[in-house]
Image 1 (tube, rainbow, N blue to C red):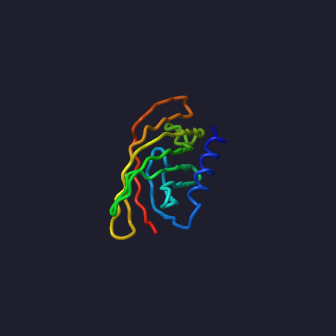
Image 2: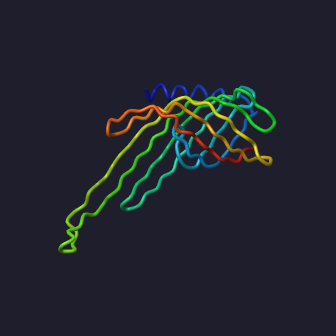
Image 3: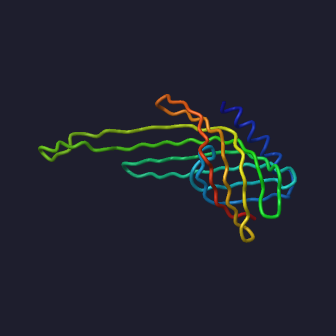
Amino acid sequence: MKRIIVLLILMCSSIAWAHNDTTQSVGFVARSTHGLGLTYARQNNESGIGWQVSGLPIWSEDERHLSGGLAIFKTLNQGRKGRAFISFGVATNYHRSVIEKWDYSSGEPIGEEVDESANVLFGPGIGLERKFAENFTISLEIPAAVSISSDEKFSILPIPNFALSYRW
């Protein structure tokens, strides 16, 4: 599965970088199949094909939240103020919490409990992007998000994807 994803990304990256007519963007993403956090995207304006990478690490002594995502997309129709697109994305989330257990009768700690989970979400989606001002965009996408979690749960959910970005 990893090899297939890497091959798709390399193929689309070479198409997206084939000409100098590219659009780039940076921003924030909250997406089921595209990850959570800061994002960078690049698109070839002639072919309409592009890619996006996102991630957000939150790391402390007791809490760890790691999120990352990778997506490829194709513009279906481009207008002056927006575009319609399809995409395929893969996102992963990791969460770890260390909880200190206490003996409430003596008021002393008796140990630690570790709560750890991970999940992978992937799938295709269709969305709309609207351009505001000259360089700001907001997008909404509805994917068919296949979710596989570390506790062996499996589901297919239409969890919306949302992004706010600056393009140039």
